[in-house]
Image 1 (cartoon, rainbow, N blue to C red):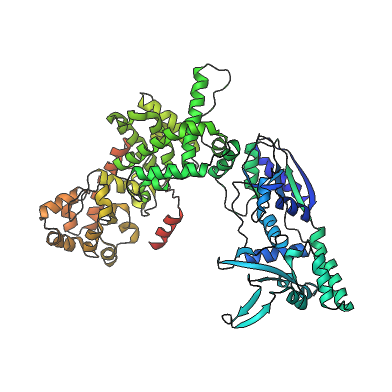
Image 2: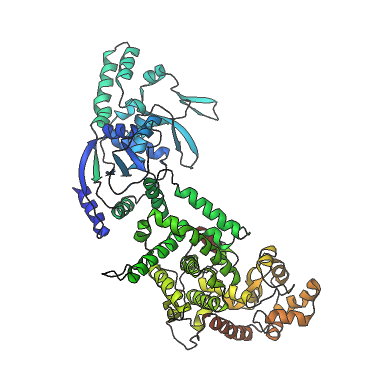
Length: 634
């Protein structure tokens, strides 16, 4: 059986997780009734019902022709996996008081859609092709359904809540089924009577005066269309109650390929709710994020984009580190458990551990926000690697007040910038997170350099390829320039967090793009980080597309400062004023390139390779939705 082969393939990736299952078929009407009555419910991590009007009609058409619509998967309750249950959408209130016999892991959309359209005597809330919310009652056009030349999909009709279909802005009625007599007259069978058709049949044949031809028409419809629903056998894969938590979560994700992948936080939400009545992890997380945002009174500071999965990865690091230390301290036999924050590890963090570590970690994250501010990273879009916040927060949680010591801060900064300019946090990095926590703490206490510091390498040629503001190293240079004391060309203000937002500071071209194009300089040369620097929006407007010699002549008039003062401002950006005033692009690039390399060397605490070669590091870029939009705009 294909479904059996499929499930065996899925389970092959579960490793040592415990799985028990059975495969069978069950009548569709029985499954729908059990879902209606609360005997089958959903685990709370399942998202809401989202099928659109076209999908509903297509599903009904498929069932009416006995076509396969896929297997569903259930999990017996009463085992170690105690997800918080909830009834399917639209189920009666009384069903919420029932303890479910099984949880529906795969098939929510199909079962809910079929229940809503075939059993529930209420209007169906759905969406149209434009994603607009609509309300529909569904009917089967009996004549079309019995026409072999017609597409069965076209026989499934959705009408507005009024059951009156109009056109020309409501001026013309296309179909009116607002009364049962109209249904009988037009031979339109309501789908919500599919499993309760006796009364409708009696009234239908009575409406037609027991006409023999119409009676035969009804029985043909009953036997050829409605019978398909009553006889339909849905394939069911049943996971036993002894199936482990890890296996349930992994299996669920592998079968739920049609929707967005669930993250560990959503699964933990359901797990914790099942472990303690009244515990709501989403509410807890909402309070944590609010406190983190309030801790730094800036709308878009780096902590505002912290994800729940980041938080729980850091928490898993703390939990597993303590387990390892306890094992070693007590001299237990066997190999000590590893420090870890893989997805399986996060899912295994018990509720008591969350309660123990969450408050401490929250304080560690506040320290992480302060650390980023100390490195002149004020805006979430300027964070080189959001992922690096995970080990940073865990490290700062363990350090406590020790992180305020100057020597500790210097080592933290070196580790941080080694990760950025080594471009080490752009891939699968859970193993590095674990090493970071153990090794950075040991290094601070006098141990060896951590792996991240040892692994970090930066080649001089890399500067020549850094053109995307989505690159971690590109963002790193931007922050280092401000951290080094760069001042605005015009006002001379340093770029602290106040001026950064008040003056709308961003990274801009030194030799303007328009001037470079006129001068025939290729984009791959003028668009690199070497020709860019942090400036206020007002200063950038003054610069416009002019040659540097022209805009530098205008700045004293705009800012009321002397040329000498402007030169000092330029030097704070590692720019040679004489070369800029001479519009000497090539000499400017050569001089500033060396100055930026020296700046990076200072940050990472190790020399940069300046030799030639083609094996320079490949830039790793992780895009989120906002970054993608930004890249498109550029």
